[in-house]
Amino acid sequence: MLTVVGVFGLGAWQNRSMTAESEAQPVASVEPTRVESPALPSQAPTADRKTAADKSADEPQHINAADPPGPAPEGMVWVPGGRYWMGDNEFSDARPEHLVEVDGFWMDQHEVTNAEFAEFVEATGYRTVAEIPPSPDDFPTVPPADLKAGSIVFTPPEHPVPLTNHFAWWSYVPGADWRHPEGPESTIEGREDHPAVHISFKDAQAYADWAGKRLPTEAEWEFAARGGLDRQPFCWGEELQPGDDWLANIWQGNFPTENTESDGYRTTAPVESFEPNAYGLHEMAGNVWEWCADWYRPDYYYHSPAKNPPGPKTSHDPQEPGLPKRVQRGGSFMCSDLYCVRYRPGTRGKGEVTSAAGHVGFRCVKSPEK
Ligand SMILES: [Ca+2]
Ligand SMILES: [Ca+2]
Image (cartoon, rainbow, N blue to C red; front, side, top):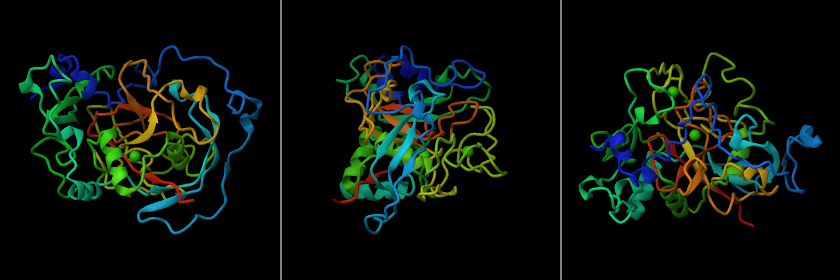
């Protein structure tokens, strides 16, 4: 088996194998806090948009009041669109909070499940990136015998480790894929209603095309996740845990060695395990990361258009320049207030487009027909 250390010694493997690990940024008492992307520009916002730096920062959001344009497609709910404050000023790549307007759309009530993904695979014969051995052309320095299909699996260490070294809890496991989330000996039997994982952006897009849907833009995703609340840190309001119960499948305990599971789940939870937000959307916070359509750039919010922002034309992540990355949102079962924190609706993640991991999934949206 190629271990993560082994993988990382193999040069180009790194490009494909670990970049979906987008919550590998420690927070709280361990530096660096949040995702501090270097050299963010200080450009003034464009004239047609408002940011929290303007006097208009107290301008409230506006949620469209019109009725849905028709009956909801199966498994989807109507997200009415409107104008809202996008971003989270506590995170360098989610600044500045700014007003964005999105049109209404339909969205999957829950993350795409193993059962749903299986229907797609059965109908099309599709093979995910994790199921296809990497090409020697892409990895010329790796011995061909080591080019085995697989994916990145969470393998928590037994002893505390520095949160700056994510190799300590991720392993590249040949044979790990959506049907075998922990490796070739594992199965999704009994987990049909869990979100499909080890899904790359390419795989998510293929599913969406087949389903007659699309991946959400980042602006749509965040509008939906906020559930009509204005500038609240969590999808449900002001407090992380307003009552005794947890409202999302995240991580409790000292990451990565101790998982108290006080929310009831060690890894993925069945979809709809947690209460939906006001739009009827489940698990917008936590459980698994969800791919968005946008290319990732940490400075995009300084330039983005005020209406239906489509994402930048190209990707750039100063932490790994040259790797094409798309946005991921919502955090996963591995996020806690000590580590990651990106279950907050205004925060961002990112992943290389052919990378998958055991905490990355997706859901789809659909625009109404005009
Ligand atoms: Ca949990
Ligand atoms: Ca989620």
